Image (cartoon, rainbow, N blue to C red; front, side, top):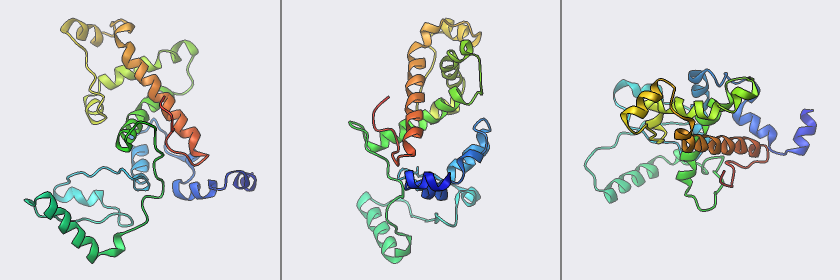
Length: 218
C-alpha cells in the first residue's frame, strides 16, 4: 500500500518525514499535547509569530535545531535597526536558508498574513465541531452553535484569535449565561464557525495534493 501511495502521490513520503505519522498524534481533545506537537511544526511555515519573551522563560521557547536567541538594544530608528540586523546576518550566514519548506498558497484577494490568521481561527473551530467524537445527528447540527458559545466563554481564546465576540446588553448576557439565549442571536457567529470549519476541512483535504491552505474562500 505504501508503494502504491508513493507512486500516486509523489510527495507523500516527504510529508511523513516532516509531519510524522498523523494517525498516531495526540488526541485533538487533549489541547496541551496537541499544541506541543503543533508548535514543533510551526517553523515549516512562513508566518511564525514573533513574541517578546522575558526572563528565564526564553529557555523554554528555544529549539536548538531551528531557533537562536538574539539580543537587540532598544532605541534604534527603524532604518538603524534594519542595519543592525543586516550586519548580524552578514556575520552569521549559517542562519540563512531557502525560505520555509511549505509556502502558503495564495488565496485570491487576501493577504498572506490574513490567510494565516484565518487558519489560526479555523483550527479551534474545526476541533470544537469535529473533535467531540461520534454524536447523534440531532446533536451534531447544534455543534457550531455550541462552538461559538465556547469561544465567547473563553476570554483568552476570544482575544488571542481575534474573534472579539461578545454579548450585547445585560439581559442578553444573563440569558446567555443561563443557556437560554435564542439561537437566532448567535446566527452570525454560528455561520462563521461553519465557514471556518469547512475551510479547515478543505485545507486538510488539499494537503494530500501538496496545497495548503485551501485556495478558495469558504
